[in-house]
Image (cartoon, rainbow, N blue to C red):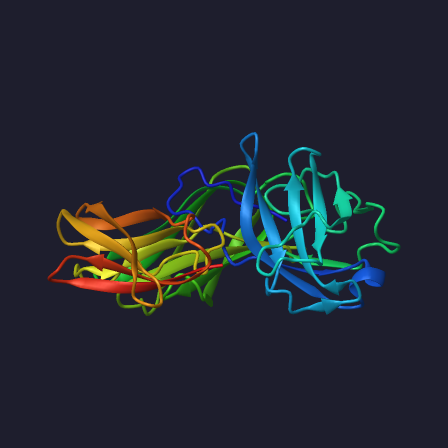
Length: 328
């Protein structure tokens, strides 16, 4: 699978915290003849190489298996220098302990996503009697990152939104699907642009959004290879409210790490108060945030908060907005 290398980092997420998923079936004697869906939950940093981590959904031990009630994780083990498929079947609830068992490992150093069944070998780690049967979705069939993205940005001009991006090199790139969202969470395809196949020179792309969303709009690219493998880009946003203040949604949301971002469009420089409340209305945290005129990408670290639903109030005494945040 081909992966973007973003030289100009505009927004995080997710994106790496994007909504990537992997479908897995294997170790049938232990897990049963069923598919597990694993979603992007975080990353590991191995000497500057970022690799994605995927965990099964839902993360609350509701998917039964012969070994009990199971959760799975695919992660790059920085100590062993390999990808591993790990199992937890003994909890505790909502706090997986993946030391229960290591099912399979693969020595292919693919990045940022795990290798497919056609790249390297998923070796039995001594726990399973059968090989991996299904491993599809955000997996990749090559080790390298041959689609090198220079930038991806959204430009607002009057009532028109144009998405612009450039690649430095491409290999096996069939097309880009353009996806849009009003909340930075749920994305829908709004069009596509043909890729450059294999190219060793910069390729420039543009996509005009026919009916831009009023207020905050979020966009990302889904790059698809000729072999069907795909990966999502980072998320970019634009305010189409005509210059009025607009506040986007937290992303990623839900968040496993508690580290999130939010776009706040301000008409002028200002300082605002940010307060965090639990579901009972108790204020847990308060801080000040400095805004510059235009779009501000605000970063928040709520990693010390326990899992749950929170209401975050942004603004001052005269004007404020509320946004919900789930930490799971």
